[in-house]
Length: 157
Image 1 (tube, rainbow, N blue to C red):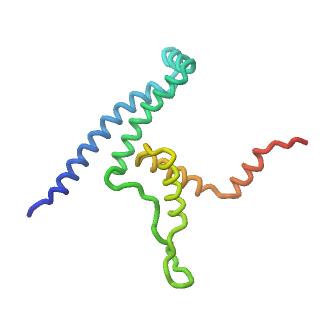
Image 2 (image 1 turned 60 degrees about the vertical axis):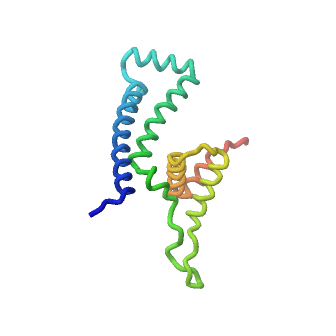
Image 3 (image 1 turned 135 degrees about the vertical axis):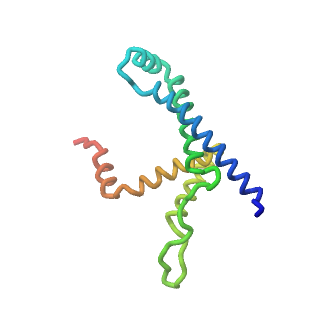
């Protein structure tokens, strides 16, 4: 039985991906430990120093985010499977008996296109994070959003 070269290549990439996850997990654990406030004086001094230098704080957060994003990219196999935006078609046929294209998927695609046009350097993990926010917003009942929206206005009476 002959194994196809692309299957060997994929298996090798999966092993490398697992190794990268391990290394990124170690680096992110170290940064997370440094970042999380603890009850020791050194951590308090470090956090108060970061408060005086917001650019340094944000750059460190980006580095920390980098390792978590690498983990996400490899653990979720985004590098191989791509970003799932939803079904192409609705599950119920329309009046003419055809399956219409899925409006929710079309909105997601449009959102990704707008994101890519504004940030051409955006990558697959950015799309996964974007779609996660998109899904979360869809899970919130509109009545809750409406009441919070109304409460955000201040009466000038």
